[in-house]
Structure formats: structure tokens, C-alpha cells
Image 1 (cartoon, rainbow, N blue to C red):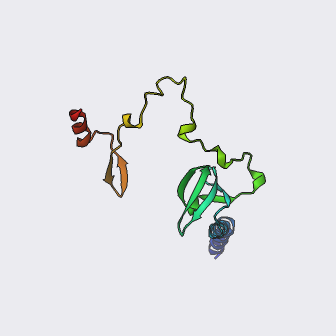
Image 2 (image 1 turned 90 degrees about the vertical axis):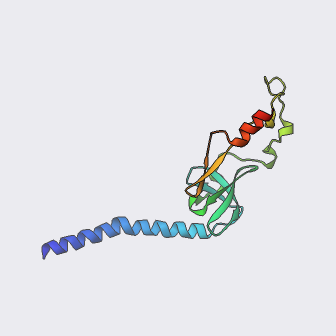
Image 3 (image 1 turned 180 degrees about the vertical axis):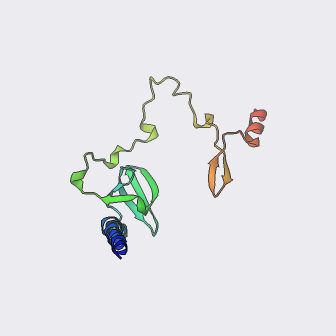
Length: 146
């Protein structure tokens, strides 16, 4: 009988010390995710700060820096941040257009063209695109034509 009481007591202690606090954290995180609004500044689980641009049912689009937007799962939000937590600010005019870049003095920059780049090839496999570094038949035909 004493053994049964000890097992029950141990189970109760484990529940209140480990399981219950984890359930509370999960519930708080789900409430946080449900309250996300476009324009909010958030800290992602990766440690990056971002501004929410669009919030969907499962995914969201965030802006990491001016003009740099990525799509993430909503579960990647660690918390909403306040202005005083951020050390740096970005302005919208920080985006540099390619025409604004001065390449004078950079060796070989004038001769470079996007046409010089080799195309990437992707193959289908297990539901995700995988990079295939081997040249395709189109590449071989294109090289032979030149």
C-alpha cells in the first residue's frame, strides 16, 4: 500500500513540476500566435527581429530588413518585442538599387553579366526540390551550339 502511495505521489510531483508548466507555456504561445497582427515587431526563434507583413492561417510573411521578405510558419515567433528592446533601426531608404552601386575600381565588375551565370537544376524527390549540380542535357546542347 505504501508503494502505491509513493508511485501516485511521484506521478503527481512530476505532473506539477514538469507537465503542467509546459502545458501553460504552450497555451501562452498559442494565444500569442493567435494575436499576431501585421505591423507587429517580433523576435523569431532563430534570434532575428522581423516585422510582420501578412499573417495567414498557418504561415506569415515577415520583413527582416527593408525589401527582404520571407515566409515562415507562425510557430517560429518567440515573442512580440517592444521598441526599447531593439538596438538598431532600419529606414525604408536603406534599400540600395543595383543602379546606385558604384563598381568603379572593382576589378572585373564591368565585364560581369548575369548571363555568365550557370542555371541551377532541381530534381523532384520525396516531395521537395533537391539541387542537382550535374549539367543537364540543355546545358550540353547550349555549349555545343556556341
